[in-house]
Length: 88
Image (cartoon, rainbow, N blue to C red):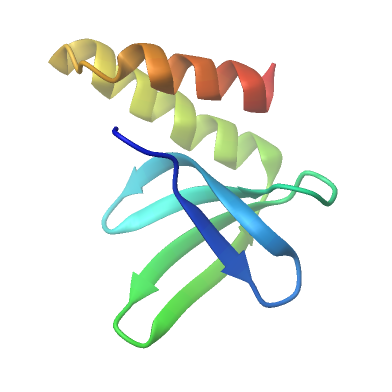
């Protein structure tokens, strides 16, 4: 992972990438407001935002960390830091 990724939500403002969720979806969290999590599917004409509970977002992020450990991803340390900043 070379750079942080951000999206602009029409109501909640800036969101930051928490973890890939598979199947072309990513978990994002609000940057400035209360902690809200979204499952985001990027589409050719915009993005689809689905609000998800904290525990679901944590589950997706934890699954991604496990996958990074199994595959020996060079970005593991970065994903671990992001996980701890977001959920712990």
